[in-house]
Length: 632
Image 1 (cartoon, rainbow, N blue to C red):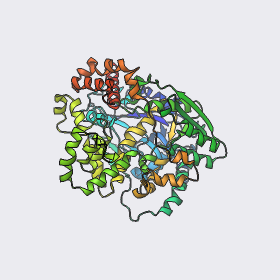
Image 2 (cartoon, one colour):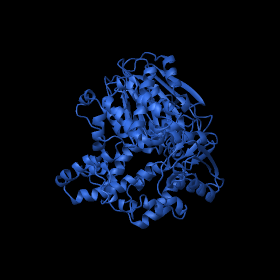
Image 3 (cartoon, rainbow, N blue to C red):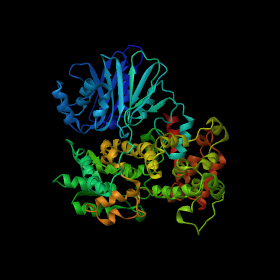
Image 4 (cartoon, rainbow, N blue to C red):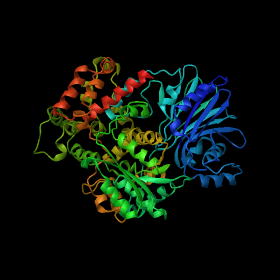
């Protein structure tokens, strides 16, 4: 796990400013505190910060190929590097190290851009090829490792592992992108491939980008992999039971290679518990596990984590976090570099802090919910879809549209029809309904929040376009699979993986994610929805397969989530911060918001009329971002 950075001039051959690339690289020293170095060619500068995991002393970066033709900077881990090392050695390539970085270099020399198809792991890398005079970049299939880039007006292409690398360049234009503000107040994050800045981008998961000397503009990145969504045969339950755990165990096994202490997060949920169970069966020594608890029972899962720790006799460490652990607010804005509103970033930061005291690598259970339909919203979406398929849109709109606006209590109705969001969703098609249910602020609420001037500037843009782009690709699938696919492309990478990457790298901790090993995803996404959402239980296929490995109290308890008590914070210790931040001159004069609606959101929450904790947190994190951007 490392940090990479670089400057590539599209046309000129002049030497890149060494002090500038060093200043940019130092912005991400937390990603790689063990070493930092540079490579320079005319018009090219590559930089690297290293966190040593494998081949601790023998794989310095930037790394030149044995023939001096190509140079690479790389962030991540290639889990099949030993097999590739053997194949490439047999093809005549020389290796001077025992790590995975040189494998990427030789794979490039052998297969060119197709080298990405050979790599199994998490990665973001850039290769400068002197002979071809090109810069080749790629990001792993699921987007576990980040990659940001921009093109300056002076022709310099700049990239880095974090946005702060790019914003450190004195010529970077920090103008914000209006459409991503609309996206942020819908989702709580800025979805790929955009950033909050008009002129900076994320290389999307499963994409590659090649720049050639002499280019006048940037080409579009090319997708080299996608979740397979066309099935020739449907899985049988027996096949699922036989293969699910064994395939997961293999994905865990290849992630247990490290020359430093290794462990796992253990929240007490199904997914992290499954990873720990697999690890315990793969090694003789006790697994190092860690968990964060809260001093409020309804937010505390440590008793379930302890059940798993006791069963597998792990070296388990627990720390309790105060319910009033909100001192990280401004620090989070600095970590994420752009507005980011998932409040579970706080306990995630704390569990990474705890883990780093004992290990350098930790395995996590992220991705299990998206892959096996574990979120409650999938069951809700499935129930809504039954009504959509029963009643045509022409009938649903006039029936449910008004109900969504007046929102009666409707105690007589089925439980899934007792929310305003549900009424609104029922008047929509599948993708729009799912978008509505996933929105922190729904379309009507965003219309109230944003100023008339800002809405006009959006020129009709809606964050629904993000979901449409992915939903249109898989409209042949069933509604739950459509929702899962959208989440794999948006929520997983933009929220979950972003949260874990920044929180872990803030502590120089590498996190590995076996559930979203691309080979496992290619198999598991084929598990039918009827097996994943069954008998009112989400993630049913995974839970059934894990019954021999985990207690029923862990598998079948109500899903809790990694949450913090926002509603209480805003009515108590953060009350003054609400007024000082959300109603600050910076927010009210930004041109984005209706000052009246900002005050209404606060007043309704403090009075108890509504729980506006999620929108208020989203606003608070946006204010913190604006304030830090102004101070930078």
